[in-house]
Image (cartoon, rainbow, N blue to C red; front, top):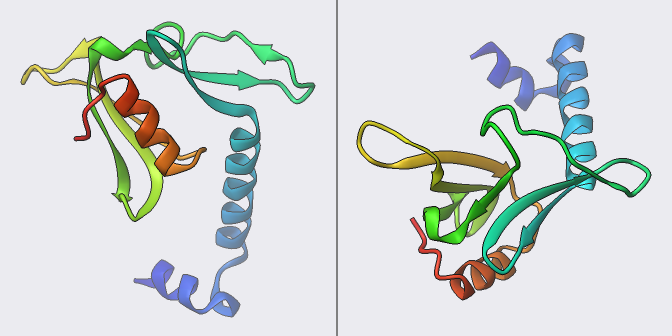
Length: 130
């Protein structure tokens, strides 16, 4: 309850909390400026650029390779917390792996694009909404 109260009354927020929020906001801002969604003919991908504007090729340690998934492997996508207030893109795909219930790997990404455009592009590639 203390942290919630501190967020409601900023003058009562501990300096460490305020600094943490500023640093986290800076991290999200930097990632947002460097990351792009890419709708390729047969794959959906997350692309990153360095601060000089050159694309970087790094392995995604979570998925064990490139952040690139075939549309045919998608179970679906959703916007969280709600379609009307999209903050995160959530999607499941089976290319990376499948859980005990046969569902694909869950991915969460900050929404870096227009929601309507994302829906249109997923529909073009026949990716269902979750």
